[in-house]
Image 1 (spheres, rainbow, N blue to C red):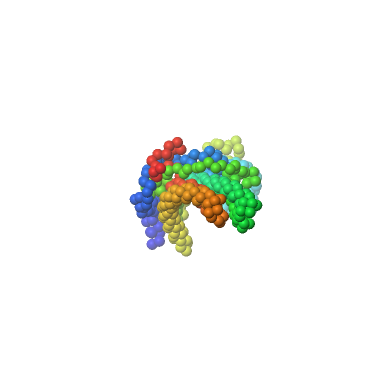
Image 2: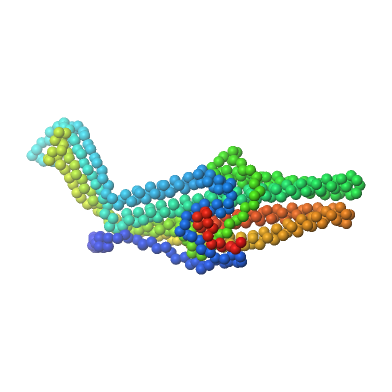
Length: 481
């Protein structure tokens, strides 16, 4: 009965002539038809077929461009990702080679003595001891008939893995360039804060000189001098803290660009950098644009192929092994007709009992596929969340920046009025101190908001999967300027 079942299985496989296991289909992922937009945002259409290349050029900063080029050329992280892609492609070549017969050439030359006491093969003939030569040359071939599709599924899995590695490389590049931009904009934001504090220190020192002179003339008490001196010392302390933060951003940029931190430095640059307008497109385009989503999808394809590879173990494997060659004890007669030898045969292997090992391997492969499906859906949901966070974040920061600029102007007017009232004897010096502190706070807040706008713009570009058109044109804008 068992043999009949095996014969029926062989016949079914021969008749089907296709790979066992499920064919891969991308799972459906429900996506919203549009983003949640607030004014002044509007929907636009990115060019998804274009190269998602140097998105950082949208910020029009030559120093950032140079750092990105250096990071792409010298980053160890990118080197690792390139090496993994090369490994995956080499593994695909190994798997693809299984589709073709394997040929081998063998040669043998030996001199040997045959024992006279070896076991007899014929009692009518006695053995004799001889010393003779043995020369042989053979061509061997081996080819697996892929009736159950094991080789096909293996190639499918290796192809998907290579494509996944390519997507991982693209994602590594995107993450690397985003990290460079983030640290660079953090550094520039810190430079602006340091400049704000430096100007505040100059203002506070002039105020200290004024109140000291008035104290020397007996017009004010020593309390006013002490208050102004305390404010100045507090502000000077903030300079040291910001310089420490700037050094950390500088060191991070050194590592990202593959440069030793002690030999890396960036000069102070106070130029204003404006974030570019980013076209949003529709949510479904995330599936084509983000390399991490593409990597998760290719991981599913590779895991699905492994189910077929594991299932193929239920079916017999057939290997054809022809051999042709020559064998002679005399080298001069090696290529004569009588020296010819050949063989051809088929070997078949079928598992009859393995204690459930094959079934367990199939279950393991199916569970692995289910895990990749869950990871894919999680990646897509995370992508949706990140884009929405970027949209709402930029909208809020745009409004906050406008309000912060108005607050700076108002704080400067308050300081001017407080100083005039103090010099005229209409108020105490505490009003001047309070006005100086308020101006420093709102100016620093404005500088920080500008840095946050740049960081959030980088976050949104990364969430959308990179650049949307060639670096020379902006295309449809997603935000009205």
